[in-house]
Image 1: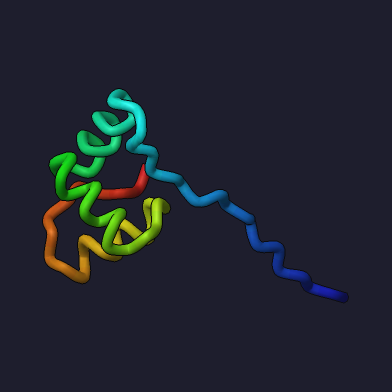
Image 2 (image 1 turned 60 degrees about the vertical axis):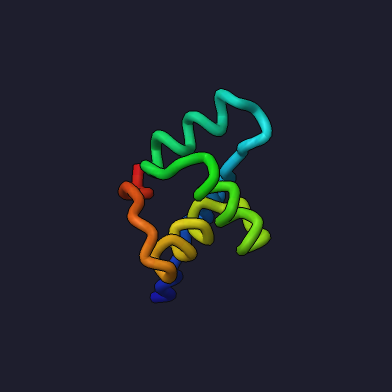
Length: 68
């Protein structure tokens, strides 16, 4: 019998801040200010939720749960 593990390929959540409504969504969801969010994006040069949450954790920036 051949047991094969199938990994579910989840698409990373991308943080968009170019539109005001998108920026409001992400700042509300993460519980941070626009300045903090944009600063994290600039510092990491990443826009995935996973990378931004990791940055917040590494820099002790309080944020809300990122799991949906």
